[in-house]
Amino acid sequence: MSLTKRCAAELLGTFWLVFGGCGSALFAAAYPELGIGFVGVALAFGLTLLTMCYAIGHISGCHINPAVTVGLVAGGRFPAREMVPYIVSQVIGGIAASLVLYLIASGKAGFDPTAGFASNGYGEHSPDGYSLTAALIAEIVLTGFFLFIIMGATHKRSVAGLAGVAIGLSLTLIHLISIPVTNTSVYPARSTGVALIQGSWALDQLWLFWLAPLVGGILGALVYRFVQPDND
Image 1: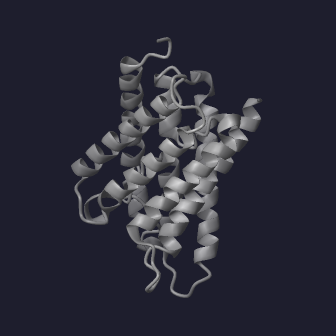
Image 2 (image 1 turned 90 degrees about the horizontal axis):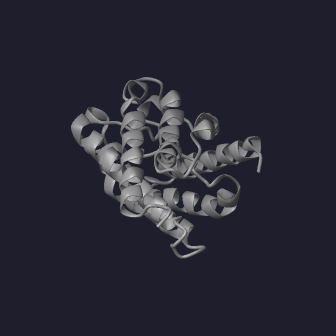
Image 3 (image 1 turned 90 degrees about the vertical axis):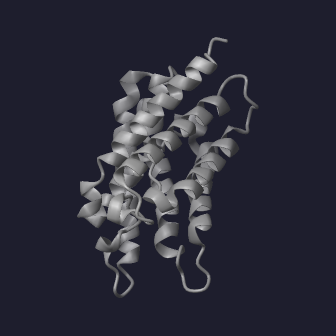
């Protein structure tokens, strides 16, 4: 499969994750009486990833996340020369989804993107007031285990055909843990798209939601590579 087609798949996959996950947070999380809440948003993110694992996993590997791409490079599963095109495609997909969400959300009277727009934050912009340090630790640890699970689920010795289920459920669990802390990133492209729409504090805090997932992704992949080398 050509790099162009694989990058197109990554763009579409990231679009779907941001549109489905952030869209559920924007439109359905606190809907009067029938709101899906944190659990529903967590499931939405997990389901978007699970569905894309089976839709594009055989095309691009379904990274749809710069932290996953960088982690897989560190883990020896992905060529470094293709890292930048993948990441650029993922960021474009995240921005495109955020723009579409903005167009939909702005159709409701009183819509104010500066109120948050499903952005990630710490301190006064954390959903439950968690500090920068707490946010940093949470994002590193959760992304690290995310990569560890991805590496394990896609290993040649793992159960064939079930990787998407394990990976999708792990993202659901990650959100169940960390929505109150940072509104859950572990996906720098997801954080970037909505931060551009929010336009103020989310952009100021965006650095953390690139740094922590990238560090966590690298650490998680290296730990798995140590525990279970691909050639064993």
